[in-house]
Image 1 (cartoon, rainbow, N blue to C red):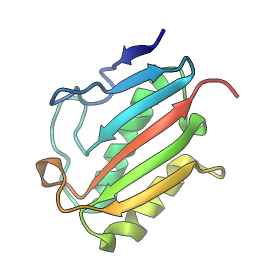
Image 2 (image 1 turned 180 degrees about the vertical axis):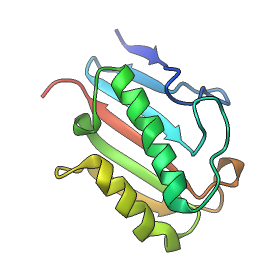
Image 3 (image 1 turned 45 degrees about the vertical axis):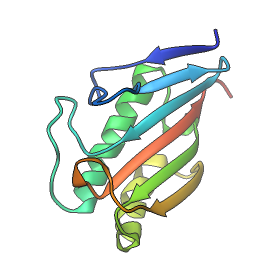
Image 4 (image 1 turned 60 degrees about the horizontal axis):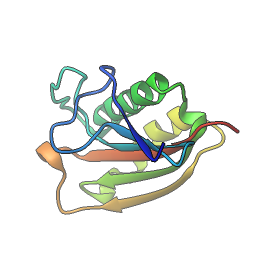
Length: 128
């Protein structure tokens, strides 16, 4: 198996030419960036903490549907509309990834889809 597409109804479906996740090299799962959309595609408004909670719910849904948890995540990239959101996003993100967080990059970008304040993508590994 070179690559296998993975999708679930526990996170919003792809709104463009991408997959929710791709399993590759046998034991790696690459999760596409999630923004604060519900699984039915409704945009979650509110402050960046509320948006981040929805993003983490979406990521958890994709991970769990693949038989994984946040403990399997080895790399995360967080995209913010402003570095002013760093502390708030960090608080919510940290409450989900636990005591052994993955490697991570956080960057501020010029814009995110649908005008949201946060998008997060992950790479997870199967096994120990």
